[in-house]
Amino acid sequence: RPNGPVGVQLSRPVMRGETIDYFVSHSWSDSPEQKWRALQLVADSFCRHHGRYPTFWVDKFCIDQRALADGLRVLPVNVMSCRKVLCLCGKTFPRRLWCAWELCVLLSFTSMEQAMKQLVVVSLSNQALKQLAHFDCSNSSCHDPNEEYRLRRVIDAIGKERFENKIRTLGQLILDRETGGAGGLLVPD
Image 1 (cartoon, rainbow, N blue to C red):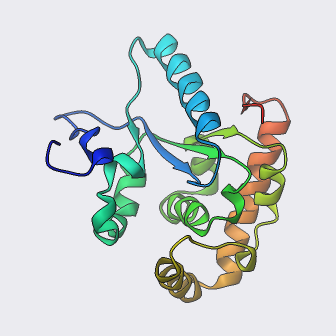
Image 2: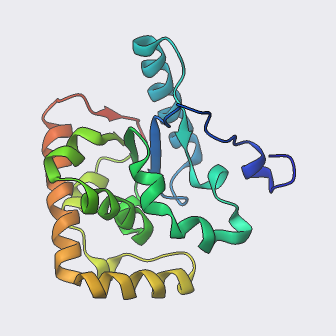
């Protein structure tokens, strides 16, 4: 898109009949180099199995960062319209409220069993998955205090304990699956 900011200029609209392969859930504070390596591993593996490279929905490229609120209002549509959710779980992922919110969106529209089938997790940190299994809202935040205030209001409406329990349960299931040798990837620190 030639008239948008640099990130958005790198995106393109979905073509008729096309479905985005991966919604990428990640923390902007985690290592860009690790996340890039993880995306390369996922893309190469996908290409070997499907004969083409995957499409990714990445916030930096798919949301105009100058109009963030507009793009985030449709987050549930963006998450659920993708085939899979690719979780790049780095050191700061479990402490970023937006990351937990993206997982909650998935859990709001699917069963836990279906969410586990849709989630592809790349662990960028040995401790991150354990921290996710012990998620605590009081230890998580957003970069922008206004975003954090709005998210916390929605979480309070859902119920903080309910929200935390959803993320903890999902985190424990991910931890069990990924550490049990069921196909998880670990990108070294």
